[in-house]
Image (cartoon, rainbow, N blue to C red):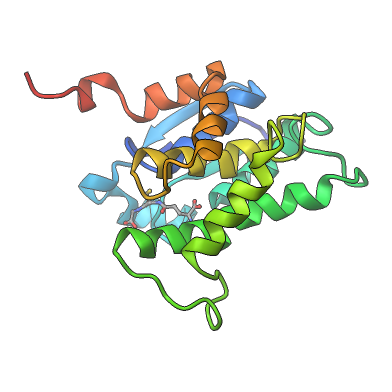
Length: 210
Ligand SMILES: N[C@@H](CCC(=O)N[C@@H](CS)C(=O)NCC(=O)O)C(=O)O
């Protein structure tokens, strides 16, 4: 008998789980949300650690499949539910760049941005992720002359790396470089982006005090 499918996203308000939520909204499959509130420490409970031993959100389950780490969730969902559309096919010329930008999002952008947010800028030579200035230069160079990371075609890489860029602009960790600001404006025109943002930063939780 085929495994029963049914997608669940383990999500926390105001977190990077926004990216996985946005991916689900882009592929347009039904899914359930279970809140793992990181501000209450729910991500460190034994039941959740069985799914994601890192104790971080997001995690996604789909039947018996368990995936964590935003780029892995993005690659999984796009291949499984949007192959040839949000995911370039395996032999498409832009599949290499697609995978590169997916991995770059958390192998380079996340560690560099996290350190920069703590006013730590390490010399690039011995660091696998390089320097903040190099990371900003790479992002602005690729986006200077193109609408999306792969050119004219919106892909899951724009959700994973683009979602990260959007999050880091909001947190003022990335500079308000016109190329990044314009790209973010294009991302925020997507209805799926707004559904995910509204679910991740709900107005009732994040409304300014009156
Ligand atoms: N590398 C992970 C990072 C996820 C992550 O940083 N999640 C944070 C929220 S933004 C978290 O769960 N923090 C809780 C904790 O570390 O206890 C991914 O890409 O999915």
